[in-house]
Image 1 (cartoon, rainbow, N blue to C red):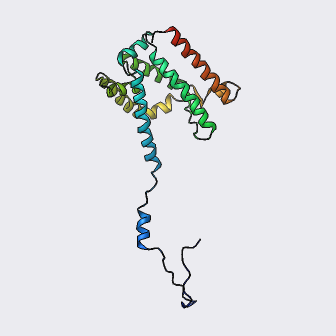
Image 2 (image 1 turned 90 degrees about the horizontal axis):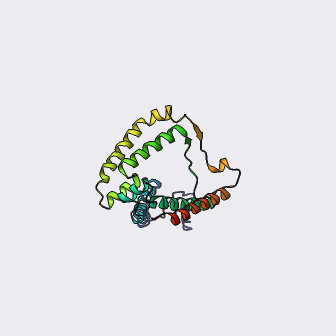
Image 3 (image 1 turned 135 degrees about the vertical axis):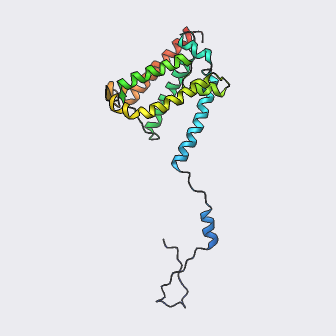
Length: 216
């Protein structure tokens, strides 16, 4: 649809000079309109928002306290397991529902046995020695537990070492036991909905048993 207007009848027909009908004020108003937020900035803003919410819930759930985390490692306080299993159930059902509604896409990490086992052991050792994991350590520091400073410093240093060694790891460790993007849907000949609901039901049963048989 053209934005130019027809000239008056007294204008020569062979005059093809174009006249811009857009006024300077209109151009200024157009330039002043807010531009859409870039995708990277939007993702960063959402990350900050959900990070704050996640930290708030960790603190309110009590899993940022030293004695609660140590109690879980000693199998005396199961607060951490209850919080984590509850989050897994909610996340599992929510992500499955959003995926069926075409709101999100799955980004599945590959199963690499050597890397997964070694990484899990390193994480477990760090957790046992400091009584904090990355999420609970940050929440503990935010609530004034300054003993978490050492863990946060170690986490940053470990992240740097991992980044520097990532090339070597990808060449030598990742190929060992590489199973690809393996999921429960690949192991059981059922639909995603059946596997998701069955897994969530099993975890809910575990939560109920823990609630009835443990003190915390």
